[in-house]
Amino acid sequence: MPAESPAAADDSGKRRLSPRNAVIFGITAIGAAILLVIAFREPPPASAVATDRLGPAPGEQVEQYLVDAKASLDGGDTDQHWALVSFTDYLAPPQLPAAAGGLRISGVIQHVPVDRVQTPVITVATPAGDEPAVKSGEAAAGLVAAQQFRDERSAAIARVTENRLRAGCACTAGVVVRGTLPQLRDLATQPGVRAVQALPADAVAGRFAVSPLLPGSSDTVTPSPDDGPVPTE
Image (tube, rainbow, N blue to C red; front, side):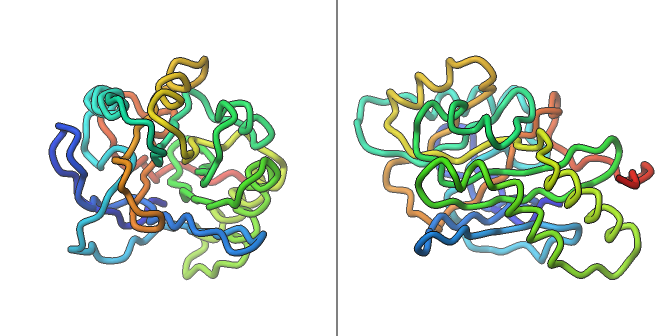
């Protein structure tokens, strides 16, 4: 489930404030470790602290977000920018290095889509290199397995999420990358890329939030219904 994130600001390219239901994303890599951040079914109370953010806010029109994301790539500087790459369809982890266009992947957003079941959004922050991104599904599954749940539905959702991630499902909704504006503009034109949104060059690693644009989102960004049966596998 999406976790707390900052509330949206305006759509003019200014930094957005923290909206609810986004995953707080720390990008610091410690040695070869994979840093994991996971959001489950009950987000904590909203924070009043403003921060940079990537991704649409709850209630935001998808078409407006796509316009804003494209505008975020305007500019002539050659600095490195953090950016969220959203895919048109869910990808399997082995597809990610090619889908990122050779840019350094700093985070992978995993989400197991199940019709009318609210499954968790899991952001796995990764050190440099292709292997951590390719193994991000397994890493996300391990974190899901370590959680405890107070009701059977939550536990059942966790089981199906873990099982599908371990099986190598096409469950990657997007990635966070780092690149220059020309590189990001080029990536935005590639097949399978729905949107690329960049932060200002002075955005600080570990100090911004990420909420994914899920491939199924087509109108307004709202939580998925949670009234369907949970699959057994």
